[in-house]
Image (tube, rainbow, N blue to C red; front, side):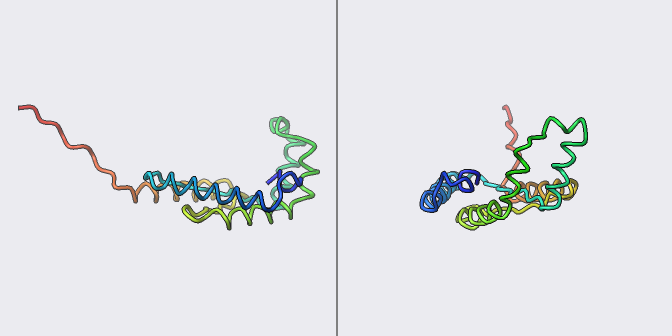
Length: 132
């Protein structure tokens, strides 16, 4: 996303990359690998709150980077490019959009999705070996 917002990657290159991602996922899925993709979506207001916490709470200060405020000015561009990426890379494996403003809810949704995927797998205990 950063490369698109900063103009290092044009639309044609991005579309080619989407196709490559889809092709890769198709190969991986063909080999019986379950693919789970999560987009952790923080709201604009919560992002601001978390950036302020990084500046004001001592144990979070190590996460602070002044450039984050400059990057935040391009919020709409980032959201547009994220939406485009998500829409164009679902051919084989769908995205799970997870709101992350409340950590407990984020963890619940991710855990639920993983458990449901595990439950769909044809798992069985191996047969016992008997010696005669």
